[in-house]
Image (tube, rainbow, N blue to C red; front, top):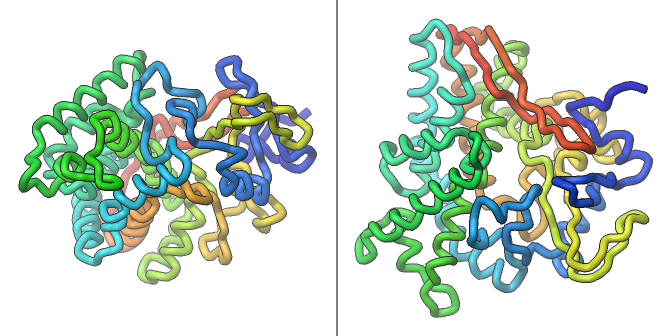
Length: 382
């Protein structure tokens, strides 16, 4: 019997059953695998609910936080109200002046890498990039990101004590809210302090929950995508040369990398009522998984899904989720990745991988390659 492919470990179960009877920390959670089924479930919030504080991530996060992450852990109409509140912040990357700031940030990181014999990408390039770009999004000085960088690649799970890490994040958020310039501040925390929903000021827990998601979501996922893109173009320089100066081709390539990498394997939903998932009985208040990573390799939707096609079109990937909970940070991620691809093409002549340590998501039911623990490269100037 052959070992499951770590790039697409769900292939056999997706083809044969459409669902994988998985276990996470001893909890049985059926994983919905097919593209059409995942999209349908993502739209059906009454059957597959997000109104489940701490239980939307898999494994659940009761041990690392005590607040509901908003808007992701809510159903309409509450979800919609909080999402509408946050849209003006998360749509900033559409503005040309914002994109220019991200370009400058990435240019500086590449320039620094070009002056060194080698650079470790995960912690010394991708992590600073994600954190400093987040400071830009939140209207905070770039220096504020230095503390966030110290938290590592994941605000909960990069280290030996996830509970302690969760407490560090919580203390940081509460102190930042306390220190916000409520009357005149334009940064994220001042905006939260002034914000209202349905005419009411946000509660303390609502503010903390929004901030918790903002710092936890999109961190390791962006880092994985950045690292995988750099490694890919180290081995496929000719492909980079073809697309780097063409905005449309860079956009297509970005979507293909999000599909192929699928930085977030899956997300949880809670079934308020007993539910049948492809013959697997799900009791009331039990969870299912919407498996984005499997949906993004569904042969019924993507021709030769295991092949990276930088001009793939159409590309209806679910790398940013689907339905009402599609990722609020997608515009930020796209801006970062597009700028990265363009500038790798214009600022470097070659990228050489000198050492790598891959990171796998090891679960009792599957093993999946998600990114790198370490990736050491040499960049040569154009």
